[in-house]
Length: 374
Image (cartoon, rainbow, N blue to C red; front, side, top):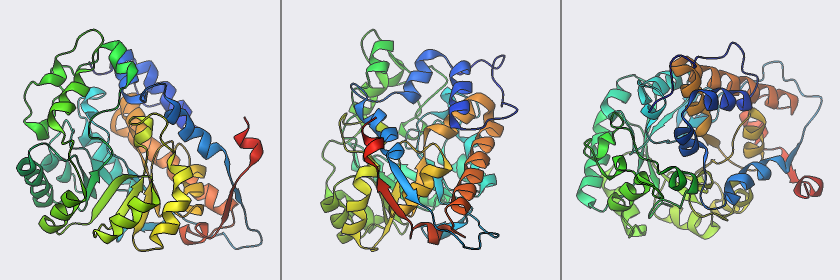
């Protein structure tokens, strides 16, 4: 079920993303809240994502003119108001009836890309009709023909990039969902996978119906040859999401991708996987500027964005925070989240002595022993 209209609504003031998450948690049914917030296994990687950001400290520069400091940048060759994109999150209609449409409208207003998930609850054509900058996140399905049909459909609809997720041969064992016997309510459908009732709607004690559904649908044999196939069949930029090893980053460049996302899937796949923050410097060195590098997992503030830029990223994806905003306040809630993040990014840039995003990438970022020992 979606959250209750009688208890939700955008807050008058959200001062940080913790405020947003608390507002969403108060509005959502516990099983939906857990589906969004949870990680896999013991949630070690989920917790480590935040700890890794907290251990990074930036050395600000002084006596620089930051009177015109701003967060404008480019991602995949398109101008954006800040180096941030909304990352792919499944089934936005779990939290609001308007679902991905509301998120897309808010992203357009904020001037940032919106990454629409394969497991969207709103069709790609309706989302691109909003008129913003839309990327399409792709899971490689067991049926290659259906996968490539999705790529063509996204391209025809006006999407401007394909974000191929490469770290989900099957869904990680997310114990919150298993304990809740989580299943989709009838009104929430995977519209790009047929749109009818499916295994995802048939829950039971000690099972995750969503995990069972993806196990049926997703390919377990995704390899570099599939990346080549994708490169052959689309003119759009290809972003490879789920890269942590520098060797894989180098291979991605060799196979013609336009960007990689350094990511452990928000702590939702292999529990104990390295954090994106820790993997990023090696990936940056391995790629050597040959393609763009994005980061996701644990981003909750403009300071986090600054740290990612200082470590060498071109920008970041944020996943959970916009969905918390959607749950707590609909489209206006997502707008508030993005406005808050934009204000924080601009604040962090100026206080670090950066007139813009390019200067942030020249900052020193160090990991302190004190932070790591907490």
